[in-house]
Length: 222
Ligand SMILES: [Zn+2]
Image (cartoon, rainbow, N blue to C red):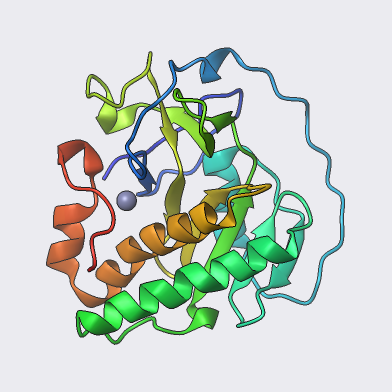
């Protein structure tokens, strides 16, 4: 596992393991122009509901993404959500759908830990691109290449990630904001969740599958 920095002007102060998943749906990636992009300063705004996400977990996700998560809510089934903008109802349902698929796959593999919606925190971050190199809708986040440097995923020092794991305890993952194709969003949640399920149920398999630059892709759990 390596540390990753999002390729836009942010300060990274947190040194903690993170999983970045660049490869999800064919893995075609745009040349990395992320480092040159400029983003306006985000302002604190929005409503905060009575949803408990500890400050450290929020800070870590903000350090990785350079985003500010101002909106806190829950999915209909009780997963906690922190988002840069007020999440659409479709997005909340997609998170539940992805977790439902994850729990079913975990059960098929006889994994029993972390099978509750309330075990998960999902951060919805800004997308650095919305289309992949084929023109398909693909909201992704740009990160420094890290351990992917020199690999097929390396695009000028950047990789585009559909999602990442930002914390293991509590289990938290990051997905880019979707405006449509919520089935894709559900898949990203399910796939990032696989790393968390493996971390808490099968540490050896977790280690073997954590770094996609060494091979392997999602779905890991069949
Ligand atoms: Zn992954």
